[in-house]
Length: 623
Image (cartoon, rainbow, N blue to C red; front, side):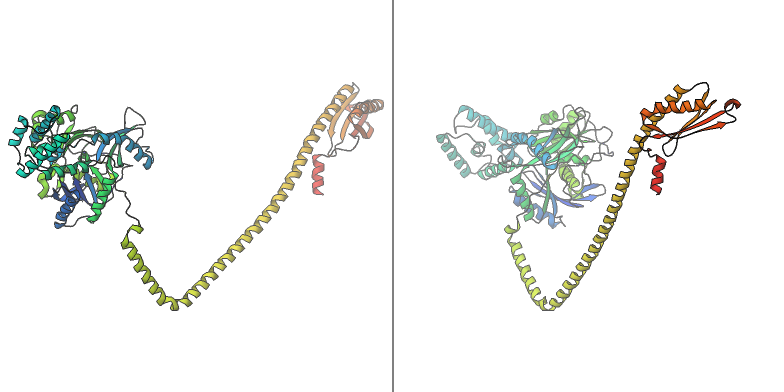
């Protein structure tokens, strides 16, 4: 693995994660369960900078919050807008049948994420043993916790209570951080004897007290923290952030998710409110520090962030598009071993390795990794004040959550669970009831003082308003009447147009029928003329007049031929309903080829009545 270099990051916008939207300054609180730190994070250029930090090691989270915020306020102003980083939050990288470019509605996404996270929450429920908590709180050394655990297992295996401790436990007792008081040891021994008679199970805390390695107060404190870390009966609330589509599986995407119990979230909301702060969102302790790499990766470069927090070790693999892998491993003995860290970063030799840890053994772990990898992994890029610069390696999560909340690094590498719990209703707020009563009394007094002076003004205002409304109604009525008149005129025009169209359609049908009849009649006439033609007969023309008459003009050499043509033609056309309307035979001095002969003109019409033509229709329209 190699060291890091700064480049431009092109992390896509996270369209479905809930950003707290806190402005340019935010109060960030980190609660690991073993210590609580509060910090003020402000914008500094295109990054977020940690202005100052206050720490509390009080085992009670609410008392620790009040103590840390008090110390923070003593150094300057504190933003009322706040976010929380809590080890109660379980992070996970999920592969879901939903792509970031086409997410489902928020309610469906939350249900889908919750369904996928609940099995992981069940697995995480027992990963914080009593020994790990005692080590993290500084009450035991890791070697002592392992020796006590070995003694507990040995006693359980032998199925007995009390008795002499094993050599490992005695050695651990000899090198203990501090011995318990004689009264504590006697009480623990009596408890053990009673437990043996009652047949109860061997417990880690009782053995630790019996060996003089810790006291009852420390054990009770550790057990309270066990309940603080996980509540199996609590309903889960989730947050999620898109990380990009899976390259080999169309329609599926990576989603960075986190979950916390609803009661735990509400407890934090109430605790922040009691200290004058508004909680906007909650981040996980492990993995959040990777968000400081926004702007540090581009061009296909990848990084692995080894995050050691409390009794969990996590490794987030990040690229330009976001988190591509997230691994979490508990270290219940309270000491992050080199082997666990190497196991987490296995197969990532080409990645840039960063170390983010709040562990007291951070420098030892850094040296061990440098001995194996050939170079010490750098810390994440964190901007702090001069007073907190030495502790910058452990402040990566605070810096990343602050940057994400403010919006200077709104990439997809951080996931936030929104604090959406609504406050109590008005019926549950006595202050609101008193305020409402005072406002009502003031309103009644004011109304009584103004009643007489305001009656005339009210009446005049009402009259003017009524007059204005009446004028508006009259204007609207006139406008509606004008519209009605126009509609009636348009309806009359429409009816006239409809009548004209009906007449035109009837005429069109009549013309179609008439034309068909005329075409058939002319065909019959032409066939008859063709049959009656002879060498002494010439047909000059055959035409139809505007009145529907057929006019036939012919030339014959003799008058007899003309009369014979007229007679034969009438005989042929009589079955077709034609009759002779007029006939003329005149001598022609210069006929065809200059010969003398007779000009014949026949006018034929239908037997009943003449069929009207298009010209007759136009004449009728003119009349």
